View 1 (tube, each protein chain N blue to C red):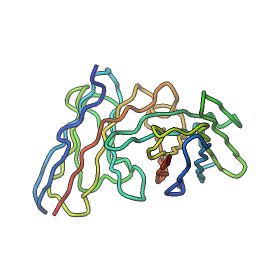
View 2: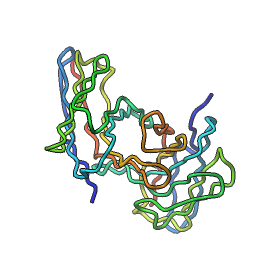
View 3: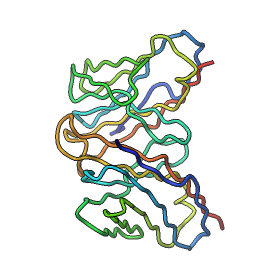
Length: 114
Length: 116
């Protein structure tokens, strides 16, 4: 079965790096995603990684994937107060049509302090 | 271009009452979805639609019905609301293939529903 787990809360100081972790159980996942949810808003796609990659960097964001351990992480460099939000990881089995779907983790609330 | 909009933003129902949540998108997306978000549980898929006139069950469909009469609208109905349906409901839409990057899901702002 599919199960995606995250820690519930992370607090960092402005300017420090944040690392948000996620573990998943479905080894056939083809794409893994990070979504951001700001207060009172819907989810917004931040970045994604294909399962045959180990790392992806996108400006201040670095995604690391350890497929052996089924562990995904999101590192935010130089964390700013605007990064305060809930971060969800999600996995997809890929494919087309009705076969593909996203399974979301429980979300990690990132609090950035001054 | 409004993206994905949801109506209403907030609603309080009494047990046994019915209501319909409306989702609209102006991006000409084929796929639309309804999720519920509960504390500590992430998002769970209720129903989805791969095109006008078609719907399918997701992970937690019981107690909900949906309809997609027009491509741009996806309605979620609660026929007899129960306190267990207290949640935040999100609608999303995407281009044809919902599992692949470039076809990511775009989310609405959510509807907070309380059933007393």
